[in-house]
Image (cartoon, rainbow, N blue to C red):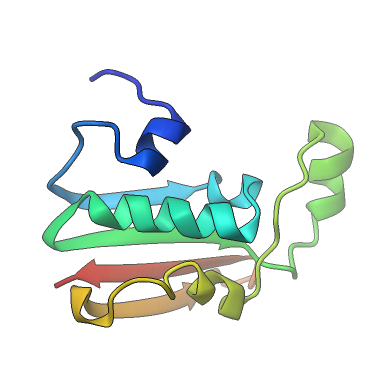
Length: 117
């Protein structure tokens, strides 16, 4: 499989399509809200009917956020549950079969599953 850039993905300049599952873990956390929303929209467009988009994001309760910044020089965007839902807000409601939201037992990672109609 050929590698594609983030720009190609966001602009739809690729041949990817008809996936059963598409997920983003870690990438959205590096992007501001508007860019993460565009990423979610692009990933959702890759799904075939009945496919599932999984979006994971660290939550503000992450106790090791300072460690990530100090040791790894990584400053993830910590999102609340409502900010995670905001990533899929622009989706057409008729395109969504259903969605579920869950959190890790420690409430450090939120996971949104969106199924395409």
